[in-house]
Length: 153
Image 1: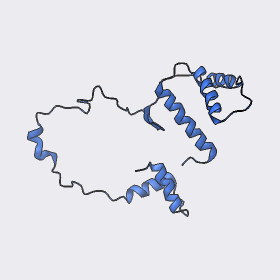
Image 2: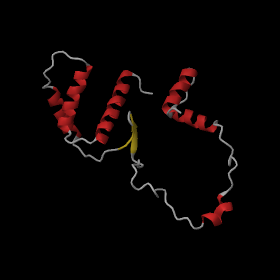
Image 3: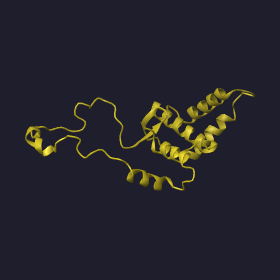
Image 4: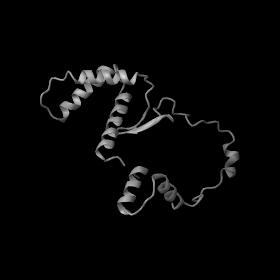
């Protein structure tokens, strides 16, 4: 199943005359969803209460050493990732990136050269970036491009 944003975009492709905002469309979509029958043959848990009375489990039982996603996450091009706790002086970081980009020695290049120079500038400004922070940066980069070129859903 696609994201709600993609479903919303697809709805407008199929219904170009619609004037729904995203919130109005979401309310309409969920109020018109066909939901499965309430129990699909399952019995209420109270019928099993005696069998389950000795259980003492948590949601993390058996998963203590497994990776997990907390409530503080985003979806990026490589899947879900946690938001970084890195604090930064945003204006000073932008100034460092801008200064580093001005030192690029290319007169001509292709899109990968541009990406390389941006990577060097960001890596210089933000030392020791984690894989998670790199994923966040890429997600923000893709989002910014989509906002500027009209492809944002």
